[in-house]
Image (tube, rainbow, N blue to C red):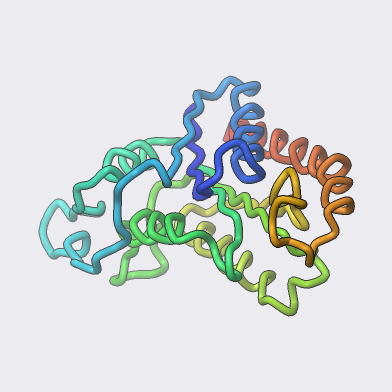
Length: 214
């Protein structure tokens, strides 16, 4: 079994990256082959709306025809048994790189002729979202609807999706070096030491579930 993690964070070895690595660790413990893809290391663009993947010819292209550094990644994701997408939330959205990946990833499968047909082969999927706001502010920023929308898209295309949320995360190790006085540095540190390890445990178990026998 093969699982691929798509990392939409620009920061390696921080919150999103750490959780995705835990997912892959859990998958590896279940015997899976794992791979991490760092989108910020690649040169690619979002969907160009060229509609080439929708041309009426046989066999139907059914895949993105753009050629760049994302092309081989999309091919490997297509062949994977499970895929987990991870992104921090900036301005109430996933990062730009993740959004561009998401467009290329899903639009190639979209079947405008019959929405009732499966849009791609069944695949286990998951989202990992990290954010610096607490859960009690989700309503103010529309976060619940955001996460549900992204999960629903994955379920529509692949029939399965789980979502892991890491909230109120620590942005930097030393808050005194930055203009971040609006945050309680001690509270952030305490949460990172007490709650984030539980998020890591949940990520590890998520990886095991994604790679369980279908």
